[in-house]
Every structure is written in structure tokens, then in C-alpha cells.
Length: 230
Length: 259
Image 1 (cartoon, one colour):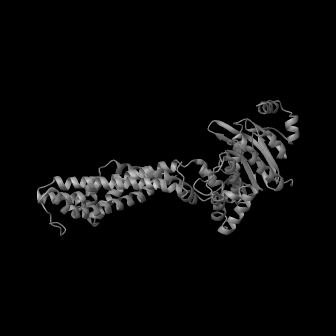
Image 2 (cartoon, one colour; image 1 turned 180 degrees about the vertical axis):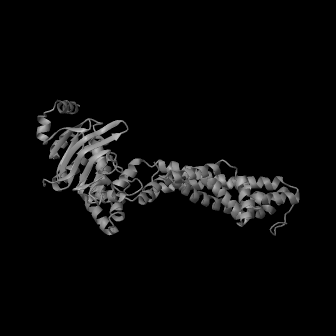
Image 3 (cartoon, one colour; image 1 turned 45 degrees about the vertical axis):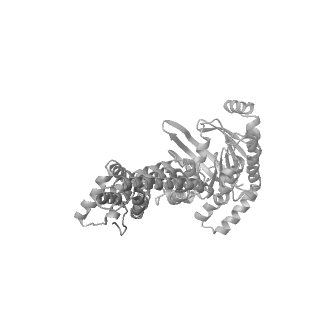
């Protein structure tokens, strides 16, 4: 029994059906961690991108070093660091929050590059037109550059969303009860790993297919909202 | 037209690396004057406009607009120091520019392309800006296209929106940087018509860099022939086109008019 659900070992099918609610409980945690991690990656990545393109090298350089460091160290190391080292400095976060943060921080290094490429793809002609119309630097960035960069970055961001989703099982090592961890517990208790692990694979496939379809939908919907994809 | 110069270049130097684009250029435009700049590519024609629009800085000399230095500020002791962004912001309000590649904002409707700056920079209400935009669209013959996006318009239509967008800021000086060079030949006429109408009906000061010699002759008070970063020859269009005094001008005109 797990989360109040009994399993039925009479046949593989019955077993699968009986543990589906348990795995779905884990899947909800997986989705929550994905969404929160992706959100952190989107916000933090934009901040990195702005800092990295700052005119002052005293801002741009440290930002570049930090993101490079994040990118070149394993997610698991960062996760352990946040989970085991931060409490030594009095910062204790719940396992789920720690895990989602670690995902978000790791992926912010990748998304910052996507933002940078998207921003650079907006031509100098657009900035010149904005300058000729006397727009402020901030207004140029928020109303001319960013709206044109968004459609360009969506496909790459979609890929990272799927990647984050597939990295969530890493959080199981710090006790987060996401889908894979739940399936492993079921296996440990019933000595049948085949069925729960196969189901995790299938459920993952469904989730990533849905996420990819969502990104494609956004890709066709945005141009209709007046944001043309060049 | 008064005699007072609204634009004055005093020994202006502009370099790109080792290349000297403007070589101690002296150049004046009077208030309300329509001046065309012609010359071979690389002669520094567009650079003059880009310096005025504050898209390019200068390496020497002084540019004055309406009696005030553009790229400098007067210190308390009367000496000139490099202009601050605030000074450039103030000075830019007098100028508008029409670009060769139109440079419209592709994610905004035609209407919003025209109203965005008046609302956000001049502080007009949305309704005022909209009314102003509709008048300008009427002027450029695009009253029925306000809700379209730039990519739904032809090049000629886009450039006319570009003209309306520049005019919406009510500049004293309008700069045209080869406004028809990127257009298919059959679309050039509609844009020139609009520019011609502006030239005849408004007291705007207009500076036009162009390869359309016949048009330059028609609308200009004065034509300047640029060569190697300087004005080689200038004068009333009738004189310059029919009887240029410089051999270099003659060669250039022959080459352009034959093609």
C-alpha cells in the first residue's frame, strides 16, 4: 500500500491499473517541479542575458563566468550543494523547492544563451528606428526588441522545457517523491519493477508529446496575435 | 524660408577605422530649404543624415542644429564638451528620419507604428495620437490600411507608413535616406509623390539623399554633389544638372543619367 492505494498482483494488467493512481500522484509532483523549474529558468535566464550584454564589463564578465560555471558542473552536484551545504549556513529549504530551484538554476544558464541569440537576431535597423523616434533605452528593449525576440526563442525554449521534465527524476536522490521515485518504491515493495518502470516510461512519453504539441501550437498561435515569425 | 541656417556642419570629420568618410565637411541648410544630396556610394552622403539623427557620432568639428551644438553641450564657461544622452534626447526631437529599408516595427500594426512614439515619448493621449495618425495616413494615401501589419503591405506602402511615422513626431527637419532605393521600380512613383507633396505644401526643412536625379531636380531648392567626404559642387538644380562646373560632377551625372 502506498498513498492509501492497495495494489493488485493477480495479473500484470490488474497490477498496472491498481498502481496507476499512485504513479499519477508522482506525476503531479513531476509536473509541478517541471513548471516551477522552467519558470525559474525563464526568469533567471533573462536576467543573465541582460547582465551578460551589459555595456560595463564589470557586470558582463562576472555574469559570463557564473553562467559558464553553472553550465559546466553537473546538475547532481548543484543539487547536493543546495540540499546538504546550504543548511550549514542556516538556509533550509524543503526538498521539492530545493530540487526545482536546482533545475531552474542549471537551465537558466542554457536559456540565457537562447535569449541572447534571440535578442541579437533583432536587427540594428530596429534599434535605429527606435532611436530616431526618441524611445528610451528601456522602452526600446521592452517594446521593440523583446516582442520580436520572443517568437524566435520559443522553439528552443520548448526543447528545454522537455529537457527539464526529463531531468526531474534526479530530484529523487534528495527524497522528492516524483514519478520515478514512486515507481521505484512500488518495485521495492512488490519485487515487480517491470510494470511500474514501463508505466513511467509510457507516462513520460505522453507528457513530452503533450509539451511538444503545446509549443508547436504556441508557434502557430503567436503569429495570429500579430507577432510575425520571420 | 529665412536666411538663418537650421543645420550647420563646421569642419566635421567622421572616420570609420582608417577610412575618412567626412573630411572637414562644411555644409549649411537654411530653415525650410529642400536640399538633395547626390554622389557616388561611399561619398559620405548617408553619413551626413546618420550624424544628424544621432545614429553616428563625429570625430571632429561641430554640428549645429537650430543654433545649438548637436554632439556637444556648452559648459558653464562656454567651452564645448561631448553631449550627454539627455542632450541628444532633447535635440533629436527636432529631427525625423525615413530609412532606406523602412525599418517599421514588424510586430505592430500600421497605426501603432505611428502612434507608439507620440504616446510614449511626447506624452500624447492615445486618442490624440490616433487622430494625428489618421490624418497622416490620409496624407500618404493609406487611410484604409491602419489595422494591417507591415508585412501585409507592399514596399511602397511600407515606406509611406515610414514617412507618416516620422511626421507624427512633428519634426522641424526631415531626413530621407535613399527612400526609394529598396523599392521595385513600379513602386517608386507613389513614394516620390508623397515626398513631393510634402516638399511643396509644408515648410519642413528636408534633406534628401537620393539617386533619383529627375526627382531631385524637381523638388530641391539646392543640390549638393558629394565626393570623397566633401561637397564637390552645389547649386540650384537647373545649374548643377545642366551646366556643372566641375569635371567630376559631369562624369557622375553622365554615368547616372545614362544608366
